[in-house]
Image 1 (tube, one colour):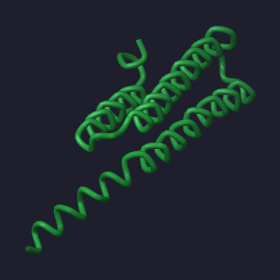
Image 2: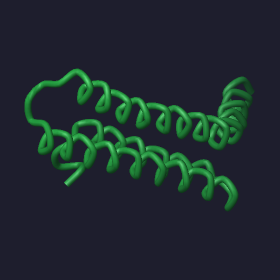
Image 3: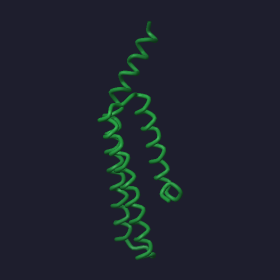
Image 4: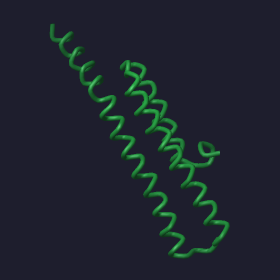
Length: 111
């Protein structure tokens, strides 16, 4: 349901696919895969909780209310925080092998 109904979940799905492909292409080690898998799972869990919370708010209080708006914003902020943390994990995990690969490619091209 998330990917079908939530535009941000589609972005998370694309990011997860791209990170998985990058991890495979860069031959990430087992520890790196653990970090990447945990980060991906955390983002999906946060997105699922946020969606559930927003749907529940809409049922409990369908009319506009500033406190409901603030609660929804806080839940969305949690997804953003988890996503930024996952991005940092991605940079720390994929960055060094990507940098090494780019350096090798540059050295090969300069010969």
